[in-house]
Image 1 (cartoon, rainbow, N blue to C red):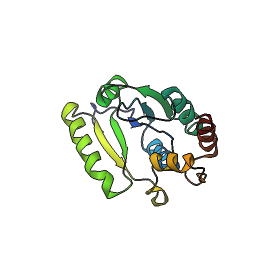
Image 2: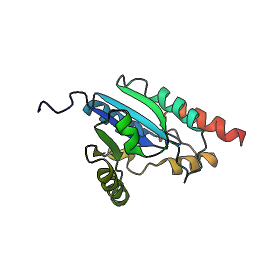
Image 3: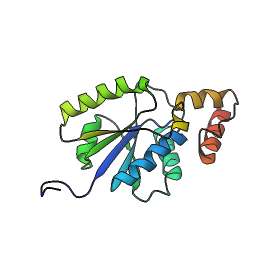
Image 4: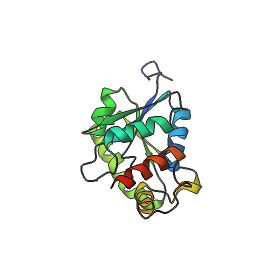
Length: 167
């Protein structure tokens, strides 16, 4: 490692996490083994209408990732690369479930590289048993009373059922 290389490796793992799934947690676990610190960033995505508020999602993600001592959870709004610079991050973590994810993620990685070439994008694949999993489908199954315990931790399942019972 050269003298100019940072010794403390920090990664940002952005997402809406509405809700966080076993696939997300798998990627967080993998990232926590590669980096000294992982900041899971709960996005305020204006193109999505989440079931949970940003603060609820932060609280849920904190609860299900508390076993990972080098993981913290924060909210962010704006450009991801600006958030990364502010937090002295070296990398952005992106999960790839299938080839269909690649084109969008590759395009975003190239944009981020153009904006901040010093921040790398690291693609991590979840365990193959989670490759079909996404939050939108989990929400849809939950809305219709379907069983979601294979997709999310019990705490998330409970919070999702509580939220949907109020609607």
